[in-house]
Each structure stands twice: as structure tokens, then as C-alpha cells.
Amino acid sequence: AMPMEFSERELYYVIAGLSYAGDPRFLFGAESINKVENIVDANFNGFQDIYRDLLTDLPYINPLPLKDESLCRYTRSRIS
Image (tube, rainbow, N blue to C red; front, side):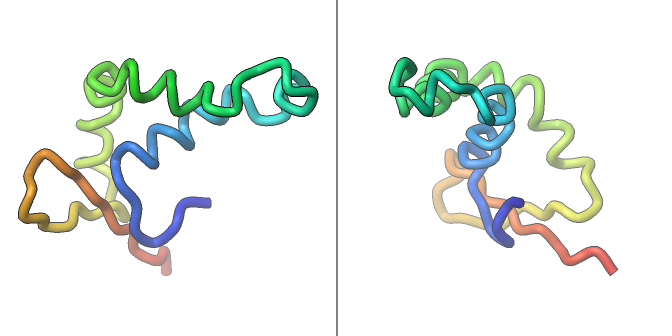
């Protein structure tokens, strides 16, 4: 589950990590422990192209105002 407050990059790590959850290569050290982060970091703009509009349309995800507009943080509301 996502924390109540998270960055856009952290969300993309979770999304990309779904593909590798339970992958035995990680258990045996046959895969880099940074694989998911490396994928997201190298393709961050592509993740934004895919998911940014969805983030703005989700009813329980709210952008947080930040001084640095290059950073995006979100908060999720509790679902009643």
C-alpha cells in the first residue's frame, strides 16, 4: 500500500515493482536490487507520459503544493 504522502517517482517505483514482485532472481541475488529504480529513473518521462493524466483524474489522489515545481508529491485521501 502507498503511504498517505508520496512522490511521483515513488509511485512509479511501486508500479514498476509489481512486475518483479516474487521474482526468484531477486531472492538468489541474480538480479540487481536496484533494477526497479534503474528502470524508472531511466524512463521517468515515459512513466509520466503514461500515468500523469491518470494521477490528476483519480478522485482520492491530490497534488501537494511545493515550491519546486519540478517535484510532484501527492497525498491520498481516506476512502469513506
